[in-house]
Amino acid sequence: MGVPMAVWIAAGLGAAGIKIYREMRNVKQIIENAEARYDDEKYAFYQAQKKIMPATIALGKLKVESWVSLGRLATILLKMEHLPRQMTYLSFENFRMGKPEGEILKEKAQLVQAVINQELAVEGTGIFTALCLYGATMTQKLDKQELNQLPGFPRCEKGSTILEALVASKFKIKPAGMVAEAAIINSLLNVPNLITDFGVTELDEKDKTKAMEIKDKIDYRSMELADAVGRIRRVHAVIERLVTGLQKLQTEYLVQIANLEALTANKVDFEKYDAKEQTLFVYTCFLVKTLRSVTRTDLLLKRGSFNVLNTIDIRNSIELIRAVFPELDPYAIEDAPKKVKK
Image 1 (cartoon, helix red, strand yellow):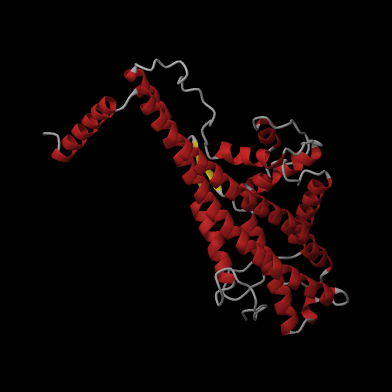
Image 2 (cartoon, one colour):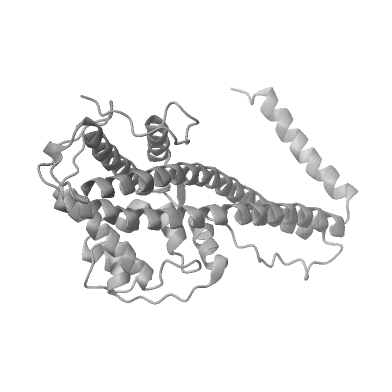
């Protein structure tokens, strides 16, 4: 079978183009053109990084604030009487929110408060970026041996989550500003080293063959950086959507938990609540269930040597937020609580 004509022509044009390019330009022009393209990609990278970092920090802070505030519902759950074994809100699947769940919420709130008390939840320690990108991984119960085997992680006999291990080890991190936070994203998204000696200074101004070799190296680095910028922009878009959604959810939860605290101050028997009071209780619990689900979504997954977007779980989280407030803008929250499904 012969080579398809289109392939033959493309190969011929490419080879001819390189030949003409070499003949029409001197060594200086060849290198300057390649470096100009690389400078454009570096500028695009710096702009993408500049935009993603505030959103990353915002999502990390939102998770910390949300998890601490869950302790307010924990206090209520642990003092309530005659709670139903399962709760139902509208057409969503049944869920549990009783004393066992209250203990879990209390433990989580206390853990995150300990992180705050040890000044780990500070911009520049990397905690916000880690929580933004890996909410589940940072809080998932792991075997102690698994924790101790993490690269660069301090050995720790206590704690079974990464956050617990950080607190238990009294791990001190000196805040290093946005650079430290950005370094995590750059590493996870395979951003290439921007400072590289391509050998330009040693290049003979008459050696076009060597100039073309250096040009190819610079162009390849430009393509690598362009790919990294694309990944950063995609992650940034996801983070911004989740920040918007979580802000709405958290705002609504804080309103409803205040109402529930007022209700349960002197009334702790669920069976004695009227329909409106039960609706308030179940709706607030449902908001907490939703908050926990969304905040524990890992945004990245490991695929070979690359980290890629966790598309399925991200989509599920976004659709869950939309489903909670279908009558408004996808993330808007105004009219609630609604009636509990009977």
